Image 1 (cartoon, rainbow, N blue to C red):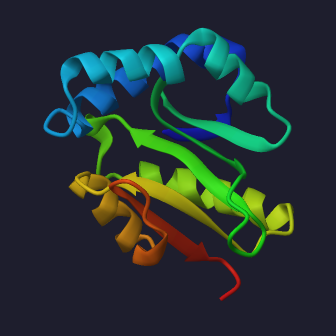
Image 2 (cartoon, one colour; image 1 turned 30 degrees about the vertical axis):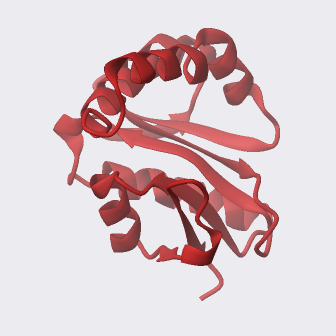
Image 3 (cartoon, one colour; image 1 turned 30 degrees about the horizontal axis):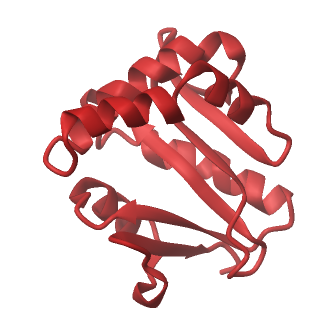
Length: 162
C-alpha cells in the first residue's frame, strides 16, 4: 500500500537511494555518469536534503511502500513569473514504479498544498531530452511554454484554477 507523507530526516538515506536510481536511469543518455554522480552528491547530499526537508517555504513529501521510498517530490515558493509563484522543484519515482500512479499521487499532494497556500498554479522545468519526464508532465495537465525555456530546459505550467 502506498503512503504519501511529509519527509523527515530519517528518510534521507532512502531519498538518496531513490534519487540515485531514478537519475541513473532517467539521464543515462543525457548526461555523463560523472555529471550524474556529481549532481547527486551536491543536490542530494545530506546537508542539502536536510535543508530542503526543513524549509518552511516548501513541502517535501515521500511515497512509501512497505517502508521503502519509491518516489518523492518537493514544491514551494519559487518562480514569480506566473500567479502565485509556486514551483515544483523535483519529482522522481524509481523506474520499477513508473506508470503505477505514484507520480500522480505525489502531484495530488503537492497541488493540494499549493491550493492551501492560496496558489492558483505552479511551474516546473524538465530537461528537453528527458522524454519520460516530458510525457509525464504533459499527460498530467501541464502546458509547455516555449518562450520561457532556459538552456535546454522546458518550462511547463499547470493551472489549478480551472
